[in-house]
View 1 (cartoon, protein in one colour):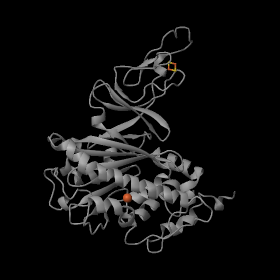
View 2 (cartoon, helix red, strand yellow; view 1 turned 90 degrees about the vertical axis):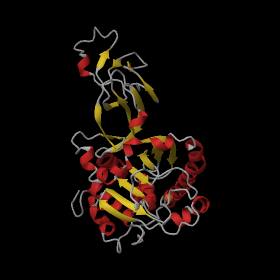
View 3 (tube, helix red, strand yellow; view 1 turned 45 degrees about the horizontal axis):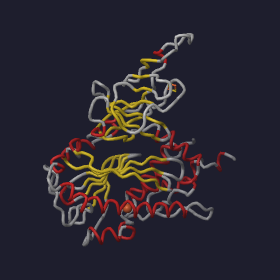
View 4 (cartoon, protein in one colour; view 1 turned 180 degrees about the horizontal axis):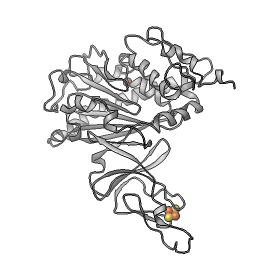
Length: 389
Ligand code: FES
Ligand SMILES: [Fe+2]
């Protein structure tokens, strides 16, 4: 195929990068092509900070959790000195996965032939290897990648030369300091696999255009009277905030709510849900009483694993009525929202599989965030506008 006809030929995306009033959406190919997907993994997911877990998932020295991120088996752990690390989960002998699930240990001992590693990843014991010529245990440490934290979130980065996590977050930590995110604790997690490209999920979750139609049932059931969910974006690209207000504590607070708001937030915060995007991988919703967030893990061009988390302040969790209230009023709407969004994302993926699917147009008042996101993907995969690849 000639370069100018390739999916990576930049000229064909000029009309997506045009001002939103004139812009066309990303062409269907970029949601279905393996080639394009592989390039996204290299230029986005292997370069950017990705949220891996929360600190309270590994609170004690020796705690670990096994996660696959973009096809890479990782162990996220807290070493015996309390430092959080991200190590390869593949044994340096013949590659076995070292641990599964969650747990606590002092050494990572391979279940196959018992090679054992410290929690810093150094090979400490390799039984019966005396006759292996030139074998030096120090050459067989587990590869590690960067792990840094903010607000109780643990992030990893495959790129050793990336800027620090804090730098990449811009003014986000300052803007949300009053919510004391570090002291929120996970109370519930949901895991789903969607038969849709990861970008479809991001696009769907950051616009309010679909809320009145796709979420009709959950709105009528849990948030009757919600009238306005205008989204507006502020902050730097890639780390921005979209606020929604329907004058009733945002979209996410049950009408008959009983659990308290976070202490110290402003009157404005009490009427809003802040929807944060931290590209490429973290979508966070901050109503006045808790945080919920989604991580999505691309698993091929048309599959995405989504983990949804709900965290409340410790003082709320300590209330006698917490569990009953959360189960009754707070978790069910989230479950219904996920179900509704899953359905619509899969519908989009099915719709764009055929050759007759074409780029559409953006709604200028409702889809600025979708348009910005398309620009971000193009910038990463192809380089900035008008640059040959
Ligand atoms: S594969 Fe791990 S010790 Fe053999
Ligand atoms: Fe939705």
